Image 1 (cartoon, rainbow, N blue to C red):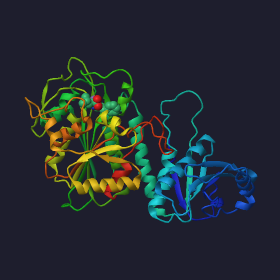
Image 2 (image 1 turned 90 degrees about the horizontal axis):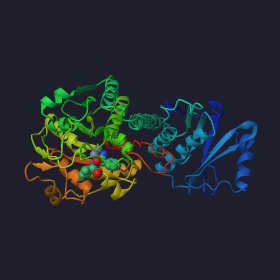
Image 3 (image 1 turned 180 degrees about the vertical axis):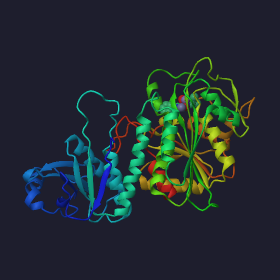
Image 4 (image 1 turned 135 degrees about the horizontal axis):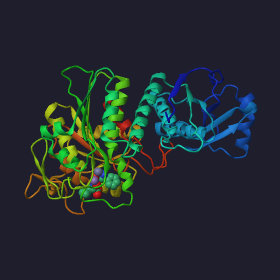
Length: 489
Ligand code: BES
Ligand code: MN
Ligand code: ZN
């Protein structure tokens, strides 16, 4: 486990928990946010020395390590202005403490939740932060010292139930990060299917896998086309969690599971092609959420669908100019084999539309480089057909701190993906509105009366953000927390 997995809640004196250290918040007026038992005897000097040396300012994002008498270790985390605590401040603070524990080889910590942080979503944010901040990916390191891991944390104060939920949610995010960070030769479609099957062992969860022969014969011509260039077995993965009333419409999550995207015959340039191992991060969102669902066991119906394959070139690969027939019978002119994500999603969205009567469908995909041009690594692009659903997504996004930005799906854009010789083509107008073209294409494969939203996570799924609860350059697991909030699990 390369992340903290043992987190407990306690309401007692931190000294009884026998952790190696204690973390407490400090406001920018230099007042502690909670009384620390034994502070005078064990830590007083350390704290007052640090304050008089101007080492601590109580600013948001600041985390300092201090040593008191008898080697007691304390972390002070900045909270900014009194009365202005937010979930994001606490998530960052808890993650900052985790990271500092790891760099200082402190194996356990008692984290004191500020006295005025009473709302349960604040407790959840602390638990999420402490776990996500401890995440490391060193599966493939075989030489050198064994990497140090944070082993135990006790969260003191706050809401017990919300803390347990936060830990479960963060565990799911870490599972997704592991799948996403693994390279294409390890995290194959079979690997994703195996993980789905593992989750499928829990109550009310049924996992079905269609192999190449089966989904081809069923009429999934788009997934069949994209996967024709690889011998690595593609999979169509369905995870059905049915714990709600029989007549309750399921909420459907669809994720792009492209385990390596070379571009196919329309091959990508070599630079950064390695990053295309992350082209299954949409699948990571779906599998991560289903893992969380399997543990929190909400009384509702949720279906996860992951079409999964590599996109390779070779004599068996599909070609620019080919016409493929998707599962809903629509024909697709392939103008660029590198716009493959929308093809495999076409079959998955058609399948979801045909076999269920969903409350809504959400899809998650590292679909376009253009979304990185538009929004950088700051936000995910969203677009869809149902305003109330989009508004709910925006409000969940505000709670979880995972930013989304809506693009329009106007008719003009829908026209741009019409083909002269087939029903649709997999490119929009050259050099224009690339992310919207992706959404406009997908729109053809969702039944008109089903509320649907597409998340283009190509900018947010891995990368660059300097957040203590993410690892620079690695997969983020972003959007999982938003979906958990939206589904109200
Ligand atoms: N997986 C890529 C999108 C991508 C590119 C994500 C770079 C993150 C970073 C997707 O399959 C793709 O190649 N999209 C093309 C679409 C184009 C051919 C219309 C793109 O964005 O260039
Ligand atoms: Mn591509
Ligand atoms: Zn791709």
